[in-house]
Length: 122
Image 1 (cartoon, rainbow, N blue to C red):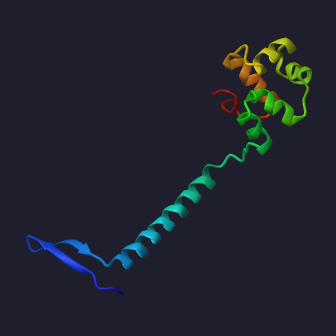
Image 2 (cartoon, rainbow, N blue to C red):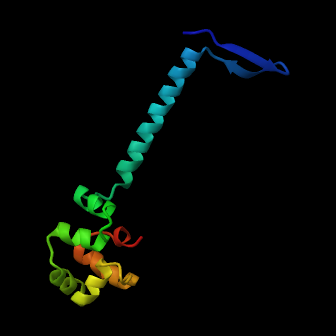
């Protein structure tokens, strides 16, 4: 192992000076430990929900999330509107960005699309 220099203050060890090679190995080891802890936390908190690539691409292209999810699920506007208990014109206005649906409506749309409501509400 590399030589570590101990510096004292008031007769007690206060600092350790380590060669850079040792410092780099220690830093990498700590980063690995932190990465493992993060991975374990992510696994513990994982709800299993994933956003498909097609939905993400549609959103990035400017498509409303309700429409992106509806199309991904293979639903027509009529089918989604009926499942959510709203009218097709109202759904069309939400998807077109002309109206912002209230949270209660977004909850119904989320249930019909089988997604968490926070995915649809920004």
